[in-house]
Amino acid sequence: MDGLTILAVIYSRVRPHYKIDMFSEIEKVKKIALSQFGNDVAQYFDAVKNQKKLIDQKDPMAYTDEAFVRDIFKQLRQAPVESFKLEYELTETQWLMGKVVIDSASLMDEATLYYTNLKEAGDWKAEHGDKEQIIALSTQLKQLTEQLNSMKAGKPSTNSEVKKESSSTGKFEEWRLIKVDNKEEHNMVERDGKKWYWCDEHYRDNKKCGMYCTHTPGEGHIKWQERKNSWKKGQKSENATGAASSTPAPANASKPTAPSAASNSDSKLALSKSLQAALLTTAGLTQDQFQKIWDDACNESGN
Ligand SMILES: [Zn+2]
Image (cartoon, rainbow, N blue to C red; front, top):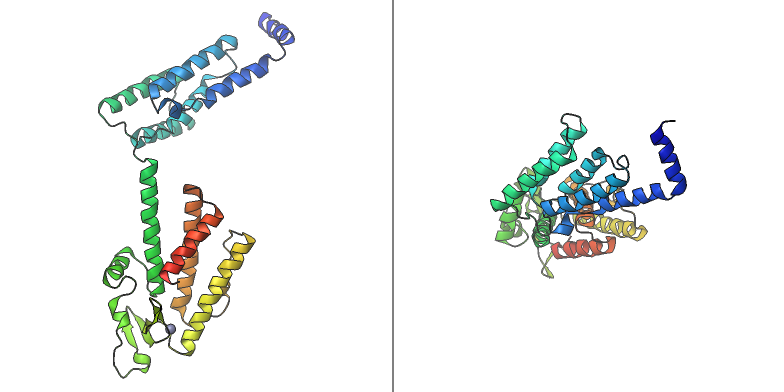
């Protein structure tokens, strides 16, 4: 045993809580967040530098510079300014891959300089405040509702088509509401490579109203209605068990006669899942809150 080791043994006998003290000191540094200083990078560095110095004075081996660098990167990644954040995400990756050698002192010097330059140029601005995120989310929700509307219209939904539809009638393209007096069975017309039949069994604004559909009237309409109902039921029972799995709705189990209508309920289900995932994680909504928004959107679009 050399002198230092003996000293360490004696020290740990005299102060058995010594190691534990070091752990809690290190924990303290890890808990210091950039956001605590109003995202002032320089102030954050001052705080962690001091804390690191205190630890090093007690035990220079307890909190390695490498661990310190890692904790600093973790905070720099939380910076509200995109360009700054990206720069340090990239640097960290290169560092983790061993492509660059970085010590805490040079990292902090360089980041302080970068931060100061951005600030002086007026470019240190948070790009996405909470308010903007809510606005963005609302816009997204509006678009998705419109998408639902166009699904009911039995069309594939691209944004331009959604716009076209909503500007003409609110929900459907004009032509779908105008019966063509031709010699075809069910006044069939062909459009977008699909056959459309006039069906009288539909409602608009609580009034009975015929329109062109991809199903035929009579039995075709009844089957379409059944598929729609069984899909809704599927949604409800799935909701009751609280399962967020991607089990297909029972609608797909029954053999679809009109393939376009079946793929609509498929894509609606997929949309429900992806929207749910987005809102639950991004906006922190609960399952119940999501279901309410979803049901409202479906009711509004008549789906
Ligand atoms: Zn119908």
